[in-house]
Structures are given as C-alpha cells and as structure tokens.
Length: 71
Image 1: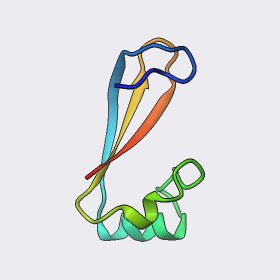
Image 2 (image 1 turned 135 degrees about the vertical axis):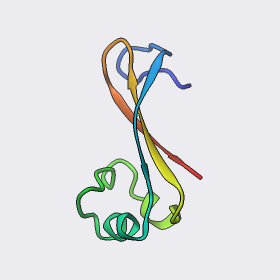
Image 3 (image 1 turned 45 degrees about the vertical axis):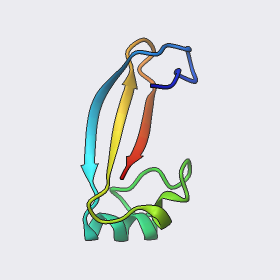
Image 4 (image 1 turned 30 degrees about the horizontal axis):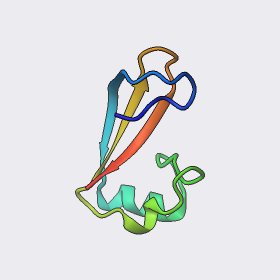
C-alpha cells in the first residue's frame, strides 16, 4: 500500500467498497450522489465499467481516507 499523504504511515484499513452498477456508473458520469470522487479523480467516470468497484481505505494513524478504483 502507498504511504499516507498526511502522516507517512503505511498501515491501512479497508472501510468500504462499492460495486459499480449501471445506476452508479450513470451517477459517476453526471457527477451525482452517491458518487463523491469527481474532484479528485475526474477520469474515473470515463474508465470505470459495470462490475468494477471502488474501495475506500483509511489510514490507521490519522484516519485519512483514500479511494481506489479496482478493475
């Protein structure tokens, strides 16, 4: 895993995941809730496909949250 951009820690906890459905992909393309990563990851709406998923990891030290798009 990568180092936390806030504290440099390398220990993370998996806190959530979302499977991309047709409805979620539409929300990504239109930047609507529940999709919340358009500002930090604007390209995800163009490269994500139904069946991919987004996992959120939380730093165990400072609780910073980082999302990851998985294929």
